Length: 163
Image (cartoon, rainbow, N blue to C red; front, top):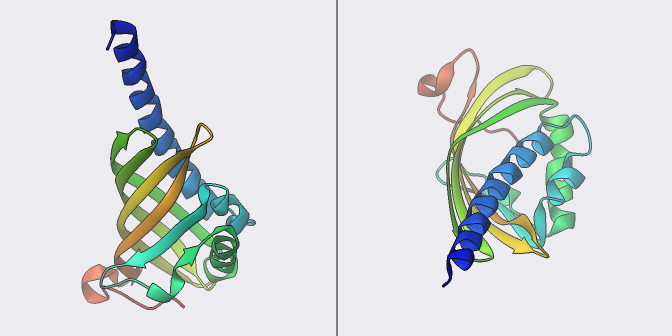
């Protein structure tokens, strides 16, 4: 590999990692949108992209694959959680050509069904894929650590159902 090829490979790696980080920022903004959540989220996924809730506090029935299913899944959150503010941190992205994996911690303050303030936290395990030069989510697994009423905390109520 020539020096130029090595520099270009390093540049692609850095730009790819940054694109995956930016994609997660866009995902947070889309999930916090006041309207049109479904379209905004689906646009960040590959055509065959999947979202899945995993772990002991997961909601397996909420899985969605493909743009139409993602739109339906996230549009239901407009009424369910009319206010949400997601924060993502502790990112780790590994790039391998046109695919990448990433892990991210998240924290969310939200209002459930218009009247109950909640804290939600967990970790994302993501697969990314570069399609036509653009990085997209191909498989997002959400491992929820807790969903708890604001005034009770995660020790007292480690997980409440939020259908």
